[in-house]
Amino acid sequence: MPFRMLRAPWPTARRRPARALPSLAVPAPLSAHRQRAVVAVLVLAALTYSLAQTLIIPAFAALTDATGASTATASWLLTGFLVSSCVATPIIGRLGDLYGKRRVLVVTLVVFAIGSVVSALADGIALMIVGRVVSGVGGGVFPLAFGIARDVLHARRVPGTIGAISGVFGIGGAIGLPLSGVIVDHLDPSLIFWSGLVALPAALAVHRLVPRSETTPDVRVDWIGAGVLSGSLVLVLLAITQGDAWGWTSSVTLGTFAVGVVGLAGLLRFEARHPAPLIDVAMLRGRAVGVANLTAFLTGLATFSAFVLIPQFAVAPTTTGYGFGMSVSEAGLLLLPHALVMIAAGPLAARLGSLHGYRVVLGGGTVVIAGAFAVLVAAHSAPWQIALAGALLGLGIGFVMSGLANVIVGTVAQTHVGVATGVNALARQVGAAAGAAVAAAVLAASTLPASDLPTESGYALAFALSAAISLLAVVAAWLLPRHRPQSRSGGPARVRVADAGPVAGRA
Image 1 (cartoon, rainbow, N blue to C red):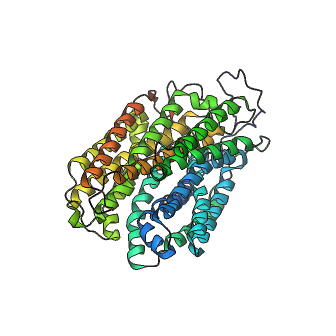
Image 2 (cartoon, rainbow, N blue to C red; image 1 turned 90 degrees about the horizontal axis):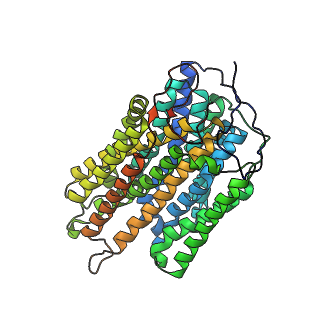
Image 3 (tube, one colour; image 1 turned 135 degrees about the vertical axis):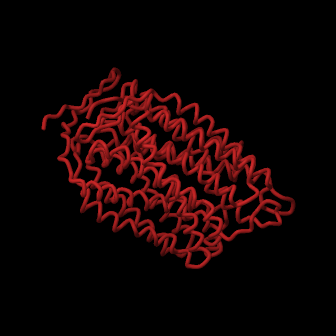
């Protein structure tokens, strides 16, 4: 089958010539049955990570009691996981582009399982945190899964599959909260970590069912860039997540944040001149990619706080005047409507995006998210009001996640899908880490007399802040270029975005 050499249509001035990439042929079409199996496997792989991200949240108190650790130390079970994920996601996406997405996905899932076992067997909080940091590598599942979907599936299946995989990110989170509640209330808390072993059958299924993808073995990995990216991100996220404990205006917080930002700025300058960069700076300058990354950051910043705020609000005793006095299991169930709505939201968003453009999908999703937080600000006196807001959040997040992934996959050249989706996931994860930290800081600044419990006004302020950030995401989403409908011809294809900027190419 004839194929075209991929070329970068943007100017390469001030950059040394890069090594030529090998030509990529369109893969042989798979049978409908095999394609359905591939989709199921990719969804399972994504679910392993998304569950691990939120299973830990309701278990903080139980794990703190079991290990004798302080609450601040135990919080690193989530913080370390998020930081590791942020660092690993773009790197793993790049490795998938270079060495084959199937191979790298199998290794990623195995490493994730190893980290889960380390945490499950740990007899102290330090080793438990180490295991969680190792498990954070699982964040690379998403860019790899998006790239595989684009590489091997028929064109008409790609948007829906990406929507389903994106939806799993939220679905797994919503399922993880009630599941963790059941484990904490009735079972051994170590099962939270043992559940990560589901990654092993997922890895086997990927190896057996997912076709091999093209590789570019003659291009070296930019390990210097990877090291600078890792160190800089760790410093930035460390300052964000520990700002409340260290003091937001302290020299330690400001200095750590400043060094991280300077490192990231230096990295962009270094990458712009590298012959085989980890992150192609010219690609990031494209309007569609830039807007998608900004929207991902703002959405993560606004929405992840809900997974922390809602269960904490629900378990607060009735004596506070606002809490429902629920058990951990009951509080987690309040977010079950969120998961159920997201199951349908991803594929629906993909369909609407193919017909009307992903700017409409992203804009609509961010509006719904802002509305959900508005509901939480105005009405939170009854469980059904919280559940309704959670359902709206599920709809909005499902639309946004599906829209973002399809914009990225449909805009960049095939050889850049892994790193481009990895950077987009990175933007969302940084936003999520910052959102959780900001929500915690808002609650800590407003507590009831003679109690460590937050006030109702503290929760209302946190919800209002998330609503305001969501409105910024609305503005960002509508900056996306207009969309041209996808071709329905056979073979793998991409959703095209008009005026996408210098990163648009043809696979």
